[in-house]
Image 1 (cartoon, rainbow, N blue to C red):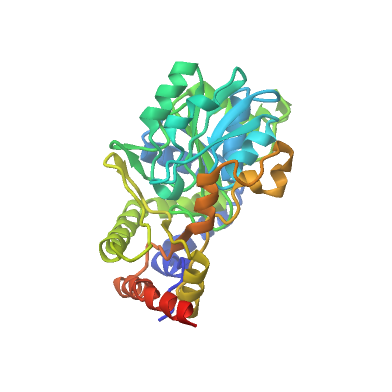
Image 2 (cartoon, rainbow, N blue to C red):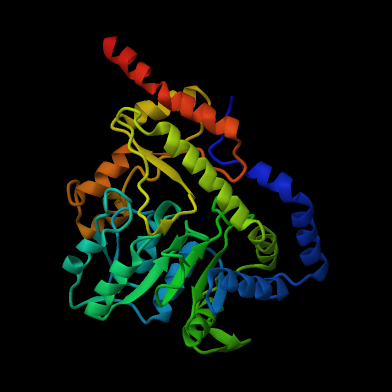
Length: 375
């Protein structure tokens, strides 16, 4: 059996008529930028998140970038970010001239450890940007408590968490603003790049919209030096179709995750995801840990099970951030995760039989290790 890491073809087969209709609707209208599809998607996605405002932008990184610009964060400022995250979280901070200040994760959840944040606060700190990694919410009450105590803003990076809940509330509404990515592989993915900013603050939403549209609210009249980052009509039309299926797809991911959790508990040396009582994850990724991760991945690949390492090099050790002066050992928990994590197949269209096959290959890995050690 061949089990892909993510099956986007099955997603298209399910929705091809609606997606094709959406394509034709936009093509025939010849409204490709800032048209009715974007406007309607913004309203629908804001309602889905339980927020008042949504502004579509070009991608998830741009969403975080324009959030920070709209907040007036810039050169000389610091923004607290997870040490364990995709580099986009850091790049957004760098784009506005501020400095990312990393904080180690809680080793059980892989999300930022709120108990470590206060120690990273300095007089230059302006904001905290937690990431809801793998589709599971960070501990937002704890993050917001630290932020309130130190007078800091909170911005949620929701790139992997469309529909996830924290204590019953969907992520994206527990800070000043939040950034979403609609990269094709996300739980809610476009047919290319796309992103959005979600907020309950109308004035903040207006600033985001102006910044992302060349600094202009009225065409040809530019208030500031903005950027060009706009969700296009085709992507908005596709996202509108997929949004109607998102909860069902997320529920299927939860079933797969439970199947993994039930069957893989007790497998030697395999660390499974930990879910706090207050979290309701949407399982963008099902990330396990193993001290012989590379050998495990090789075994699964040989048996046609698709896997991905998220992420093999933490941001502080990337060449792009040599200027910050971090070396190996600076953030040992993040570095350990980078050496051990492996994401298993997880798709809204993954079958029970495919999941059982993955479980079978994982369960048999112990014999592979024994064989390699005896040689």
